[in-house]
Amino acid sequence: MLEEEYGILYPGQKPNHSEQFFSLFCEDPLGYHANIVRGIGTEQEADEHNARSRRALDEEFEATKAQELIISGEDLSRLNANGVGGFYEWISDRSDAVEIVAFVRHPLPATASLVQEAVKHGSTLDVLRSDPNYPMFRDRLEPWLEVFGFQNISLFDYSETRDHPNGILGFFCKQIGIPGEVYENAVLERHNASMSQEATELLSALNAVRPLFTDGKLGPRRFANDLWGFTEIPGSPFALSAEVCERVEALAEPHVLWLAREFNLHFRTVEEARTQGNFGFSEPALQYLAILISDRENGTQHDTLLDRARLNAAKGNHLDGQRLTREALRILPDSQVAEEVLKTIHAQEPAASLQTRGSGDEVAAGSDSPTRQGESKADSHSGRNAKSAANSEISELEPAISQATRRESRHAPEESGAPHSRRTARSLTRRIQRWVYGR
Image 1 (cartoon, rainbow, N blue to C red):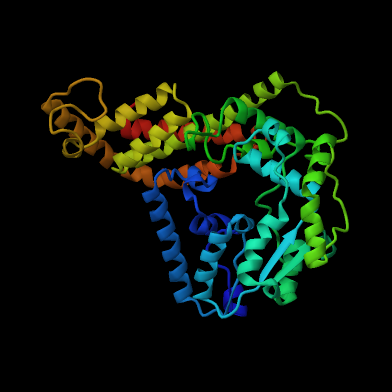
Image 2: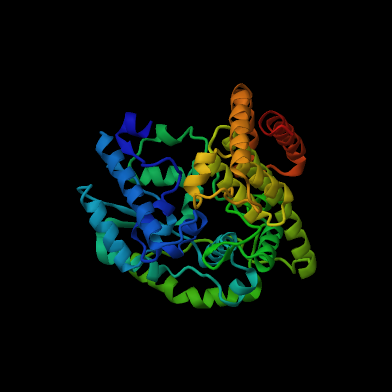
């Protein structure tokens, strides 16, 4: 609608451009949490990922007839001077003029939000309480001022957006001249909702006993979206302790004074950000509940991955089936079901494929025992017959499997229908096993 009716391009399919643009222009894409979650572990993989992003953006720009471009992402404020300079060179080649619109928030609610984001990305509250992740306005804004100039930057107090009937979206659109008809009837979706105090404490406890990242990779028994099991937990609004609030106010004071001096910006309100009392869970209780929730999410993800692995194997995509099964084993390392699925997929892989992947002998790839050539051929023939017999059943099952596996990104809680979803997935799995694996 923006592009077709108003000549405004908002590139990509995601509501936020942080991950794409920060990875492109930061100095350490390998250390960026979003890239770690994607499994990017080498400089070559990071370069290839960023090259794909650049190509996608260039193709979108070449195809559009829009005269204006909007890029939005809070992580852009984390770029250092070199990163901002790289962004300036990139955007200057594609635009005649650039206007920067930035929002700043009072240090206390801003810190509460930053702490929650850090916990979502694997940190713990103990670490954050000893070293608060407070907003360093001057450090974040000065690189942009130096590169783009004061005249091209508009700065606003985030609390001002509350006065607009359409919130921050309406406030932002009004500032850049987008007609009210575009956003007045818009239905807003929340993509980064705050967690309750209880949920934040639980996720922090999980990060302490089951780290999200280990050696620059996703840790065992964790996966990228497992935090959704925690975001659903109701409770009190997350808040900082009085001690942390005092430290944050003292640390942020030079930055607040800088905003007042350079931009004449004075925070007009202090949103509630202080705790009203001590949180009630003991540390052992937090860890027990955190692991309980994590195990539930891991079980759902494990089952989803195995369903996808079986379906891929049935369609002849044995390598994808093995990859998905190994990911299920990474999440649940002691899963005998996943071990059996992996062996079954290996056994049903065509003999020619096994020989090209192995050393050319008669040992099946990934198998624990030698297999005679005749048996390998028989297994291959049996696998092809099973695949042929299953084709029509797969066509019937794929939509249902797809619907069941959408829980991978949504993770509905038990009381919202998860038992039914799991029963459906198990039923589908049994049908696939009967048709494809002869179980």
